[in-house]
Length: 117
Image (cartoon, rainbow, N blue to C red; front, side, top):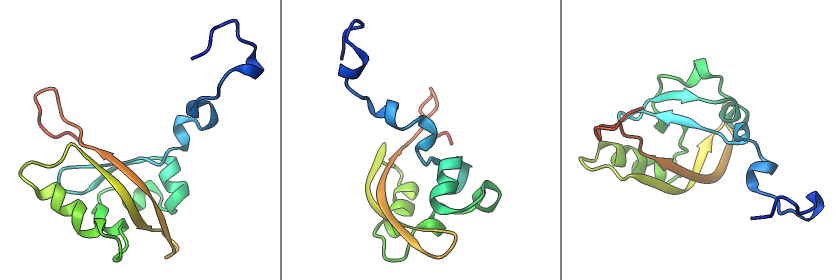
């Protein structure tokens, strides 16, 4: 936290100042594991246009060697799915190459507690 009178060159840099919200790859997946939203940063990272990925199973993006390939669908099918998933995943790019990265997924619910996508 800095005081308003702190000279600009002495202020700390927040992560939001370095990377805008649009630099974060985001996808929304429904309770059945189907991709329902896909942002431009996700397209830049994996190469899929929204029309190519929306409506498809998220599992198709997970490389066979990724432990998440089994864990994510199992979590989605669970009678009590976790509120959050995080860890390392290996994703498949449109060109066939792979990328390993950190994944943080939150379960969205409506005000009534039902899953929302």
